[in-house]
Amino acid sequence: MGIHSQVVVALKTCVYNQLSRETVGWLNKCDRVEAVPGELGGISFRWSFTKWGYCKSSTLLYEELDAIDTEDYLVLVACHDYPFSEEGDVGCWDENPWNYYKHTSTTIEESAI
Image 1: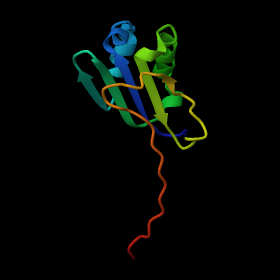
Image 2: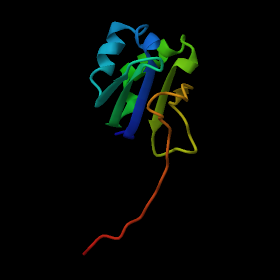
Image 3: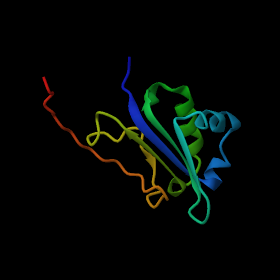
């Protein structure tokens, strides 16, 4: 089983270029890839429904990012425990060109019978 999450990985170009070939190959298989050229340039990867915590490739990504300046990347994991848990969130590229941030909302809707 496991919890499915929405995940975004935003990397400055200099960070992306430091990652292993294995990690880059895995990232490029995600749901959506967007590149932004220029001064704030970078590349982002988004998954809409993934078992992030159970993925060996995500563990390798975290290990590689651990040696890099945290202001050059951002990983956000939107799961059922937020805002009480920010497990999986790393980096602090807050002024990324996509303006990624977490948002929480809950609704109950009436179904039409």
